[in-house]
Image 1: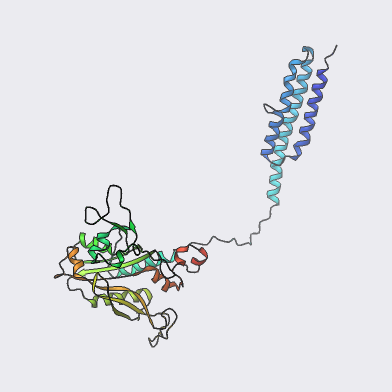
Image 2 (image 1 turned 30 degrees about the vertical axis):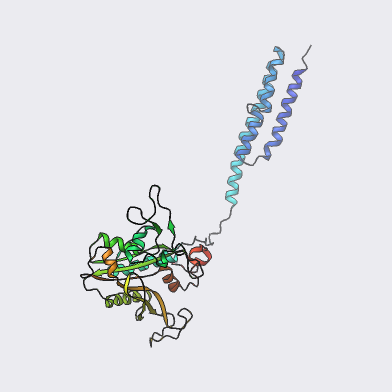
Length: 366
């Protein structure tokens, strides 16, 4: 009597073959083709599972069932190979049918540019290098001794208040206080500590500029708690205010254009005596032919633009830094780099430089 399992198994094989043949044309890529092969011929594939039924078939019927299984398997493998070749041909046909407009001009990626403040700093450094200055930098965190004491700031000077200066928690194991053994630390409020470090480590003549980031507890439309400053120092025998004014003339001419006037206005700074604010003639409303200024919004109709502070180095500063004030004299100046950038690129608000808005910065390519 024949076993009923044989025709049932063959029918199942034919059903799987028909399912494979129905699914094969729907495959569109190699990944789908591999998934189809696993579905039917993988270790847990539907056709592979049917092979395990061979052990339940009588010995005299196994040969016929094995041949049927091999035939279905070969059909599946042959279909996969054929479809693989078809996919290659379809991909080639699509590539050949693709049209390329060779007249189209691709958009090139826009080249970047320097930040206005960084560009201005580099330009300032180049100007002063041509004038014979060395460019030096120093740490952002300074001891109060270099930031205030050796620069002739009195102990009760307003700049030492927490409302004006960022005081820093000292490193572990160091107690804040007074004296060299227990220093107080601050975020430097100016780059003048670079001048102090230079005078303590290098004998005159000294001719340096010190650009860098400084920090003050100010935050309003015209001030930022972090900004950039550049200071200059010249120490030698016989240095006078005339040398200072000549240097500022040369700087203004190189940076803003020749022919602009420079003037001093008396002012007080603890580290210079005498001290002066220095202004330059407004280059934006100056008549090139007459040299007169008509007045504009940038100079507030005065014809002059305030640049920064300056003066002859105070003898007390020389003494604190180990320089004989009876032999050497010197002058110093300082101004904000952002202010120079605002003037150079006509930027209306200081905070545009720090907000990082690319739409704003793109208006001032450097």
